[in-house]
Image 1 (cartoon, rainbow, N blue to C red):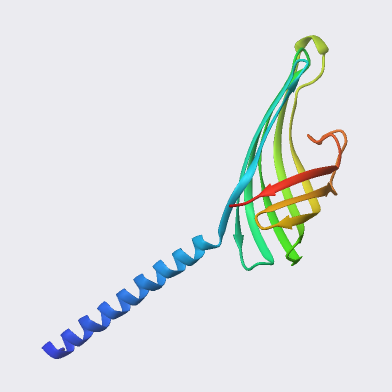
Image 2 (image 1 turned 120 degrees about the vertical axis):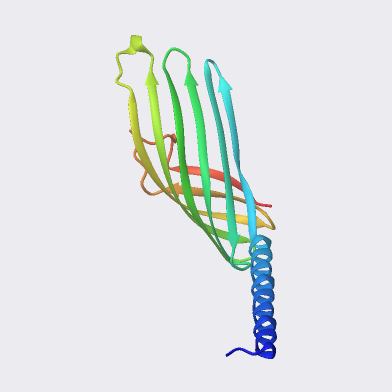
Length: 174
């Protein structure tokens, strides 16, 4: 049988546990968001009947000053007058490692869905396919900005949306 004192003690204990859990959850949530960085890329290219636009937001979680991992999204539209139009959507997983403050090594796996529609007069078959890329890179890092170069080890000249397996990059995270 629970007495009035035991009921009050139980209620006090449950209130303390609830308060502790609430404070701990809030602290973990606050700590989590202190380590999240946002960035991404915006691309725009045009000339002589060609247009390309890209939006590629991303987010990283910094485990410490040396190691970060994150995800990204990619959306691209290309158009080449009287040749083709394409839409590209996908995502990526990225890992960053800095053995020293000024050097950043990266590995990024990207999976893109490519939908390419050719001008009917060309008699080319439209393409719809998934394309994977695995970029390994290195760059010079100064606080939240990194300049570098990366290489796609899965590069396929016939399917890649990139002209070359080597690509320079600028990475900025806030």
